[in-house]
Image (cartoon, rainbow, N blue to C red):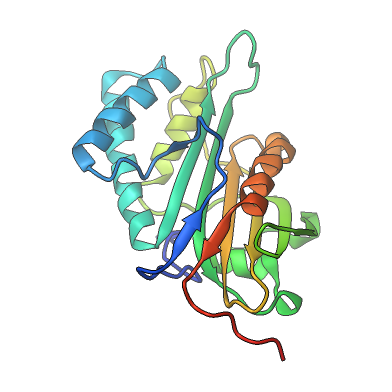
Length: 238
């Protein structure tokens, strides 16, 4: 069985006093909301029918079932948001847009000891090729931030792989119904307050690796402009 990227490695649950102010686009679709499963099924059905016009009713139903299982995995892993941006191929979009953006609180060392690749590898349950990644620090609304761009071939949890492959195939006009899940682009940021051991992680994945720069712009905007207040006092600097 493949490693489970939502197993909660490195992610932490937030307490009752925690506050999260996320800078998200106004049309950002969060697959974890609404929380009510019946309403969520209805909205997912509408989403997939709009996004995958060539899919059959049976394939749409399978996609909805798979996404409901995915929601359960993410919730158990303390993920706060699973944003989705999807535009099928068409006259004005020769290459489909198929992006996923996950947001979670992460337990982190001090910024000068932080290895972004190692941290996200722990969260994902697998590593990517660090010789093909680009890492850059930046200032964030909370204080410090660091971002990374790269690519990897995902190892998906059992039962989720066929869902992603099917969605990837149908996202391309006339594409196969069961396309292979190959290399994907990844853009990630970690932002936090100085002295805090908990930071905000934003992980973006695009099915087309060539779209990673555009995805990186969205991920960086979310990470740099969002605030996570754990409700706990920051540890004093040594």
